[in-house]
Length: 289
View 1 (spheres, rainbow, N blue to C red):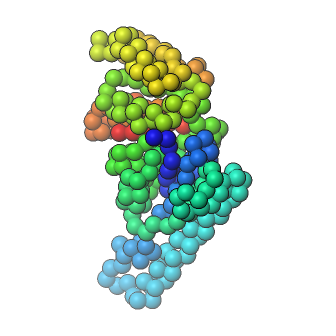
View 2: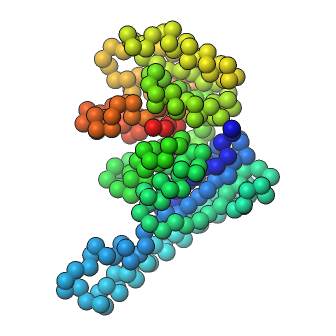
View 3: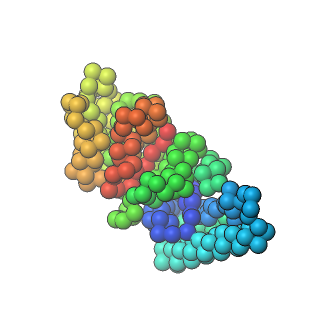
């Protein structure tokens, strides 16, 4: 089935723009609907942790008003960005299925913890589009990405904060033979079947042989994907660095990656390909766990 629904969690701010642009790029190719959702906490919930003994009613009221003002400012920013994006991209605003003649989009709000909102809404989307944040201390943005990737079971498209919005014309497929890589490739077949070209990039070892890689290439070719392969020996160097270098050399605009083939704890402690690519890729990364 083709990609038909793309969720863009919005929080108000610069990070909303690249995620919208990438979603629109995909939506136009498949006539998909972009579900732009402003996720936010209830202003009263924001204030609650600050309330304790000695905090007067007037102080609480002032805190609530301040939180409400911040919420309204972020909401208005998100709505303005959405409306401007729709106008500039030529995307029809439509909130019901079956009424748009091409790509469409709608704006809505969800109240609650941002990660929980994305988990709930993301499980009904085909793809979730988010912008990479350079500041890993941005707890809400980081939590949204992790919820999308770890809790929804859906494809997640992470785009860099700057650069081209072209997504999925030439895709570099990171292949290590894992179930995560296999599942990601299966979920992404609607995208892969529409690309101009794809290249499988794999590190050869005793576990993953050249014949194994060729079998995967053939499986994609049976789906009509214009696909080739690039392999390299696993010699102890940086796999993520080699992967990204090969992707750039192949002229790819997107990397397809099965996220966290090792346990999440192991990746957090020792590092791993997923973390390196998430933090450093200069092109969009399409992934699933």
